[in-house]
Amino acid sequence: MIELPPLAPPVKRSLTIDGHATSVSLEEAFWRAAAEAAAARGMTRAQLIAAIDHARPAPVGLATAIRLFLLAEAQLARPPGRD
Image (cartoon, rainbow, N blue to C red; front, top):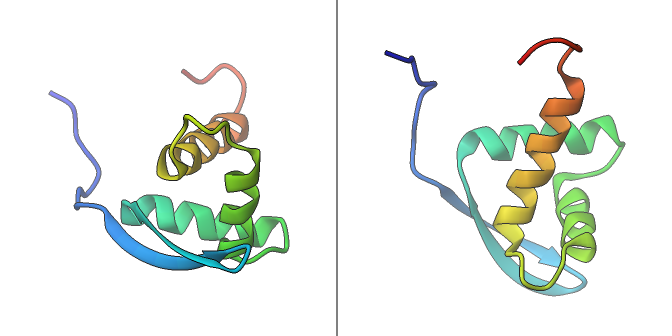
């Protein structure tokens, strides 16, 4: 049996991208990871999410793009040889 981290439903938060209000639903762990990734770049979380929004292909939803970006960040941060 595997142990899961604390699980909770997504939390919807509002932000502004290019002057347009939008909302994104993400699990709290992703909101925290986004804040950490933004701080590491000297950005606000809203600025990081706007950058992800600008870089994502149109068919990919914003929440999906954020999650995949943060997963890639976590994988890059993992020491080599750890699976």
